[in-house]
Length: 155
Image (cartoon, rainbow, N blue to C red; front, side, top):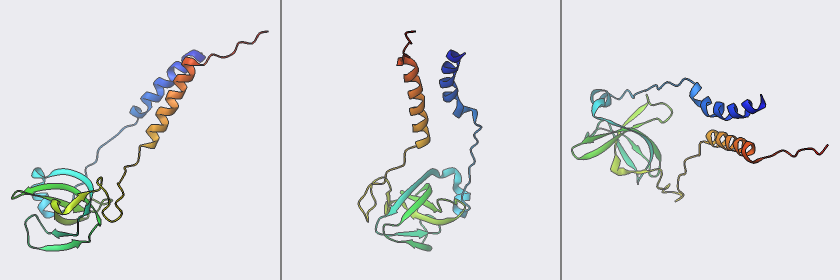
């Protein structure tokens, strides 16, 4: 019985993440321009730094400035839209996509992965710690079962 347990344990641990039901929920911004042109927009979902400040417009190519992003401030761009040869990004609240601020010219932004302009330090994404620990534990169990031989008592 113990033999089957040690054979089935790694199989169970590998299949365990697939036993959970997953569903994708897409929450889209309520920006008027986005609602009319959603089919032409390309999802991005990344953070950027405003390179020397950025002007936020009501819609791409518009003169209506709704806000100004301070220099080196981190912003979240939900999607991009091509307008007259320029790429514009829809700036939204990262935790609440329904809260949109307006459109910003992507040339005025730097990807977060380059570096924070104010500190010069690179932005490093965190490792998926749960998966790392799971695979380390699974690997340890497999290695122990393959290579560890219990000492036989000499009685």
